[in-house]
Amino acid sequence: MLKTEFISIGSDLNLAIEVVCELTAKIYLKEDNYLFTKWIDLKCNTLEQAKQLDEEMWKKPANTLLPHQLIHAGDSKIRINIGYPGTKFSKDEDRSLINLSPDFPLDIKHYNCYYQMVIEDGSLLREKAAKTWTLTKKEGFEPEFKKW
Image 1 (tube, helix red, strand yellow):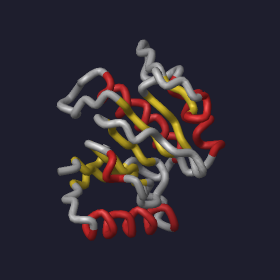
Image 2 (cartoon, rainbow, N blue to C red):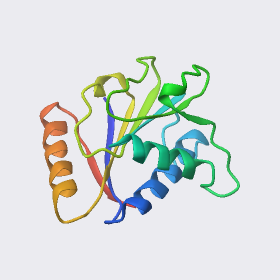
Image 3 (cartoon, rainbow, N blue to C red):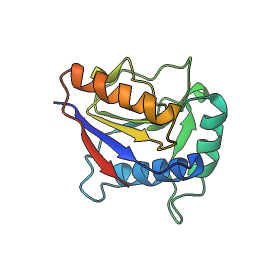
């Protein structure tokens, strides 16, 4: 069954990007009992957000180099890919999805692990994340809710 976690990360989008960098490192480096997968897909809400995440991943976490790219770069050997609306990730096996977008991912069944970032803005993003939680349950998954 697909491992599914909704992770509450506060109300700040910049903090959310930091958390995504840290979580990606934990998966990539097999730390803290996170399930290692060969490929890690990071789905952003906009191209601008994807570019911001790309820049932060070169700096964070400190003293760790995570080989990554914006998905449109097209290097099939890079295992960490950052996507945004209109882009498609590979359907190769052994994948994790970290979703910064509050929307339910349509291709979720191609993944081993699904991490949904929940931005607690008290408004639209939180409401969309709640709808995504409902859709996840409707799909038959058993999501866990955690605070970062």
